[in-house]
Image (cartoon, rainbow, N blue to C red; front, side, top):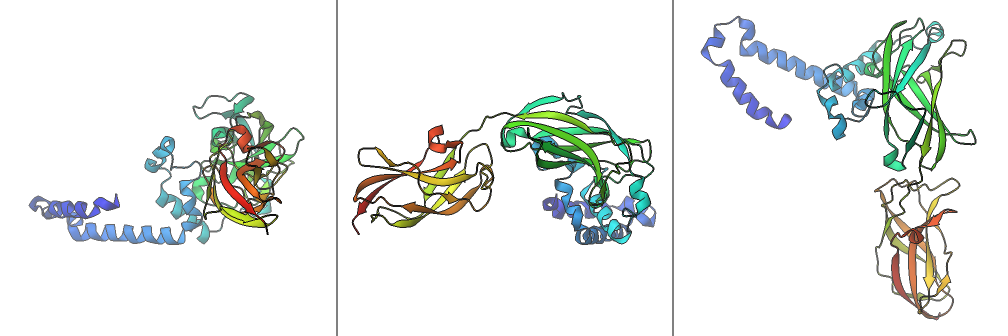
Length: 363
């Protein structure tokens, strides 16, 4: 809307200078209107500057507004960007007693039911895909059964906000991921409210138990001496992994000396539907095969070049691939591909590798 302001100002001028307007109460005169707009403008700049943390999280909390399905958030009057920044600034000036022992002891609540995006009760067993396909909107109905008031995401309090915590446990009962659902409003004792979030399930296929409970973020879990109901669902992350890759060489590589180890600069892009993790039991690394002039594999398990960090879907990175050249002179083909350790070579899963003809000469 900023782009149309100059034109809008011209139109407002014509309106304000119209003769009948001057016959009204002086408060409607242009000087007064200008003063009101100026005050509001300065106010907006102040809360934008000093309330930016955590007010800037408006875009992503409770769910991202930068998605076609959630664009309605841009027009919500109850939780505007200016209001969120104002609350953030207010919390910096007026410190709430969230660390007070009595306040913490007065926290208690129950999870009444878990809903989907259409406000329908969720089954206790849900299948999801991998990566972005696992994204799912969760809603939770809550009741404040304690004596302390809750502060939701609109308060921009961050520390002390009441949130629903979700914990994913694998089949070995090991915690693999934590998520948050954001509670709305400031409910008092016996009042109900809801929490919402868009949640991505764990990156690896498997069956997980997702357990929900209540916490005051950064302060404490809800006291154990209060009856905090826990709810859970079983989430099955289906193995629909699509192994795909794009590997490009940055500088020509046509020949090398036998037995040498060289570095080849590459650009690698993750075109799979899952995150390439660089750590854990099954990391994704760059590797290679060597084929002789007849297409026979002479080196299958090449040196590994690790990723410097996890690479998200559609992410790309520059790597200096470590390559050990064959010991015998001749003409070969270098086949560069990613490998998910102890799971699969990407080129064996129909992912196109980068093949480079190389001539090996004697030292």
